[in-house]
Length: 234
Image (cartoon, rainbow, N blue to C red; front, top):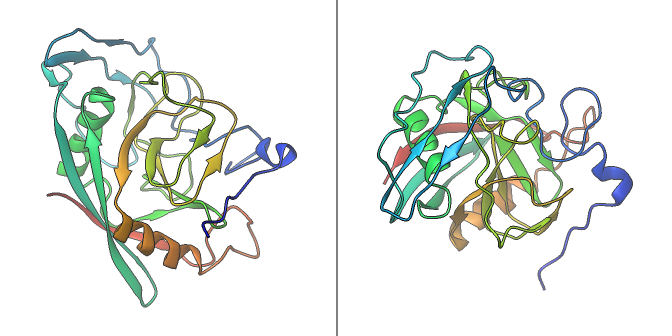
């Protein structure tokens, strides 16, 4: 039987926050409001334009993605190699460009530049998710730019097993941090861009890593570092 992990409302107010108390899956520092409003222009064509605007300093040198002529159709796969102590495994992500073209384009650009390699998933919620994508490992780091949410009509406040969504620090503050959901995760609203799915063998890898437990010092951190060894396009 698949277990549903329900987060009490009182806990939601402080879920997965590196410093202070705020609701939801948060980038504590990198997601501070951009210097300009991030906007996304979409059309009913196979290309869109995406605005990636300057935000806080990048924690690793990185170039902003090209936001012109971004593909709006098809899928792309990436393999995320994870390791924790003697445990290791591949997590395959399938991304749907039609649902979140600007998010997929950003992830693809960061992965190609090695932004995610040799970083840690700094947050976790027992039996439900890992949050990754900050090379500083603090929850405050990002790529030096932000961009708009891509919330679809079917996004709800319950994030189902097997999805990947962007962490943020409020509306339209997406950067590099994302969370991998391996058991149903209720959050504080449909505020997070869902941009990929995880296949069943990969969910087994995440469950095995999740079974390592939580840190005694920080209930929202894994018991031992969960490392992203590499992110490669399939």
